[in-house]
Amino acid sequence: MNPVYESYQRLQFDEPLPGVLRITMANPGRLNSADAVMHGELVRVWRDIDADPDVSVAIIRGSKGAFSSGGDLDLVKEMTEDFTVLSRVWKEARDLVYNVINCSKPIVSAMEGPAVGAGLVAGLLADISIAAKDARIIDGHTRLGVAAGDHAAIVWPLLCGMAKAKYYLMLCESVSGEEAERIGLVSLCTDASELEEKSLEIATRLANGSPSALRWTKYALNNWLRMAGPTFDTSLALEFMGFTGPDAKEGLASLKAKRKPDFDQNCPL
Image (cartoon, rainbow, N blue to C red):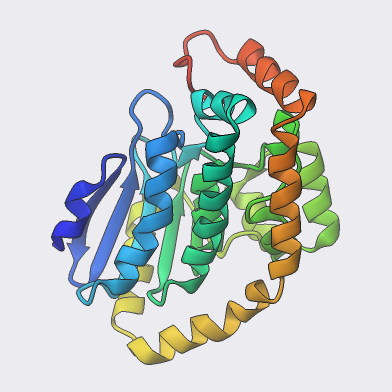
């Protein structure tokens, strides 16, 4: 395996099949919430994969039955208090979307349990998105008191239509994997017990396909997302502007108050 992956702390890597690199998000005790370290690693990993000649396909998943539970609340608190941190995370959020879109290698996501925040960005922007039937896909921005930015404004309307996108993004409704497949938000769903096998099956088929044909098909289709660049930039600016206002602080306090007492204090659910 390429030694470049040895520097990662929150992302773990293995090669279950030749040409297939599997990425596992791991933040123990916090349902794989994206702290400052993981957020930065989710940005740069796609550039490393794009440059790795030994990788044909990437799979992204979460550890211990959870995909990703959103932004770590310590990081969210810093964003409401420190403009330098806010600016850094804003740039990372923008780069995360474009790095996934521009990665020339096919990406498969395997989502189970909660799928929220930065992890969900990669999960839904993946070329083939697979969700367990009982997965819980949530865009939690408005619950936190900020606009639904990141990937949501460009990809949700394209995948499931404007009416469904507004319903789920404005109300922060949870979408099961089964419902996500029905409305077109994900490529397919499967039983949780079959999720790993299905993701490997799809990755194998992609790895055995024509690299150039897959690369340029992905590039052409993702032009739909690139054309939404002005919408994305505006939504991202509106989202991060919200972190400087009172609604975000109230939303953060509300999330902390509603959190289950047996959860880690920095877990956002």
